[in-house]
Amino acid sequence: MKVLKRIARLAATLLLAMSVATSAVSVGAQAATSATASVAQPKASTKTGTYQYNISVSLTCDTKGATIYYTTDGSYPTIESNVYTGSIRIKGEAGKSVTTILRAVAIKTGYEPSEITEAIYTIEIPEEPVIEYMEITSNPTKTRYNKGDELSLSGGKIVVSYSDGTYVTLNMKKSMISGFNTNTAGQKKVTVTYGGYTDTFTITVVSSSGQSNTNINKDYDDDDIITEDTVNPRISGTAIKGWGNIENALSQIEEGNSTVIVLNESPSVPADVIRAAAKNTLDLTFTVTEDIQWNLNTAEISTKTVPSIGLGIRTNAISTLETPIREMGGKEAFRLHVNSDNKLGASLCIDLDKKYGDTYASLFRYDHDTDKLVLVDTQRTTATGFVTLVPDESGDYIIIADQETKIIGDLDNNMRVNAFDAAMLLRMIVNGTEATRKTDFDKNGVINALDVSKMLRYIVNH
Image 1 (cartoon, rainbow, N blue to C red):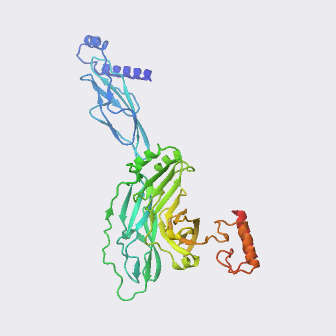
Image 2 (tube, rainbow, N blue to C red):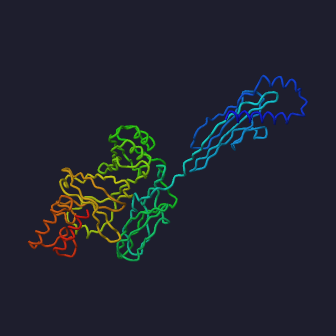
């Protein structure tokens, strides 16, 4: 590199000599000066380094009257290069790493050219934040319609979460809506779409009886936006707020510690926050409300494939049909809507109420396509009614509390199906016991040897 700089300096000297060959200036006097003095090396205002934004670089020279020549294309500067007249703009490109080599030389008649200054700038501008998911945070006020009523979106809100951890809350507008139809009576699923993501809410259409049930509240204008430019979660018991500060704090917490993060209505947790916690293997608790929390242990999370996770929960206007609930038996203890798929298997901790203490809490997801409840998880509640369950995907959920589990075949209520259950089922068959939901393993209305056979195959495969 030193050899190249020397060659470049000699080249600059040669070109300078050629450019002043016809000058009337005394060559002897210049030669005497050049043999004893060199132009001061130019100075760059910005140090070599990596930046996440475009920068401006100023060049200065301590030798009065010197002219600075520079390049940004990787070549070495001569008097044929750009003449410095003002700040040099070094630009990057979003989503890419762009490296620029700035070289400069200062020249003055009668002096040797300066040493070449070199600065290397890498510009890594982050990609424009992209939408990671969208979810409904508030259903429209009006969800019950008479036949022929027009759509009303008053009160309906969605939140849009971006890859940089920011989000905005938007009022629903008609251009987001599909599936709205009041031509026939019944429950209808209405789809809200934004940025390629969808969520749904349910309306009920009843036969007209007199005047329509119109909503006197006006709809929001299409462009009405409730802006929340930055999320404001915090670490409980500290003054640490905002995802960036939380990420830094988690990266410094000792291995195995527990940390409680109050979401403050933030719908998602950026991947960088989870990645920071995964490096130290932490127990994280994300507080949604006083009665609802998410728990996540980062021990088995790969720091290379961490996604942002959605932890949004809605507890109002949850649609399920009453018939399948009654068929399950037990008591309805809680309804909720989970806004996003549970990509990392976080546990949902809910304080049901003391009246549901020491019972079995079964978490069912409502399948809107089949109008059936799908059992997702069953756990025993504490004496005060606290339970930890794991939802699997976004959707409407209901928790049913009972003195027995809702797991088909779990006859001894130990929350698993095994050989003891098969033995109990055989005894029931011998005694002529009537089929129930839990004993009718093949769902044909009777209990017999086929139920035992299917149960045994299930036990072997699980």
